Image (cartoon, rainbow, N blue to C red; front, side, top):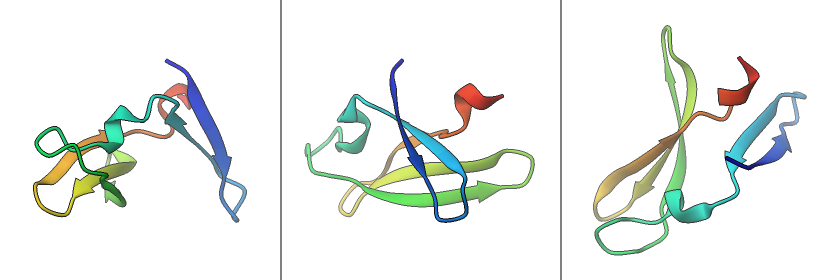
Length: 66
């Protein structure tokens, strides 16, 4: 899978897939909004949420860095 790379102001590099289908709601096809999700033992993830239908996908921006 190909990733776009972004650097945060703190110098942390995050990666998201170049295929942006993960940003679309499977029910209505609308654009989903990113929401940071942190969980003990799992690290940080980015959830994509449709305002009408809820959580649609989760991306691990550090997947290839392990």
